[in-house]
Image (cartoon, rainbow, N blue to C red; front, side, top):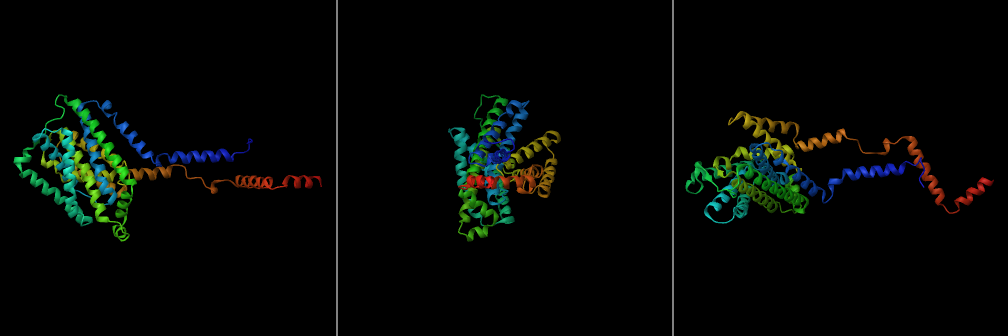
Length: 382
């Protein structure tokens, strides 16, 4: 029976409880539960938005979050910073629009069909682009966007050129507020898909190999990792999910313009969102999309169609590189570790506590020895 002076047991139990709480999100199901919680919280936005504009802004931010998370499957896991993912976003948009206009298939089936075609096409593009690294890879991806922009602007008979392409709405009977609300939840489901996809890849052997490429590609290759094939697979998966985001955007917005669909600046902003939140974190791109997307909408609302948002984006990028190179989530984790209580160690225990533990241990050893009680009684009688 434990007496009133025995405090070691509850201290051990308390420390175990603290460790259990600290590791609550580190198990197999912890991150999946965190995704469900985040999605559930985001699902309340249509109830909080005061007007259709705020609801549409939420749709745009979710679209950015899906795009940035899909980009992070390539840029974050392999370290290959692509500024050309907007090309596959635009191809997904136009592919979906053209299928809806010129065929009688369901709009969302058109999204998936266009995404599959774009994913296969990205394998051909990636086979050529991934032969180079670093700044050369960035330049190649930008060149891909510029080529697509010129093609879709000049191919007027198919794409509509600078006039644009009008995509029929999948829910023509809905008013604009209801239309935004429906697509908010569609994009939320798409965000759930890309978050789970990223988590599954990140925890797999495939993801571990991609991170080995990110840390030191030459060493990974020398260890027998098929770096070229793995990079190409990651590029294809990332572009496939990006094309889905582009296709759903085409159904929501309904008016496609090559200048926007193949905008290199927007592609750079997507990369900035992932870098701002933290490319090594599951929710890093989502946090970056909320910050940057909300800021862009604020600048557009208050300053109109000016270039001020480009200046603000550049300043934000400089701030991230200087003060939070690993993202705001990494910075927040560092602050929490500094401000929170440090881990318990023997140095934090007083001399009296250490002596009490030693005496208790010695007493327990004496009791466990055979004949110890009889020896003690004889010594007491003497």
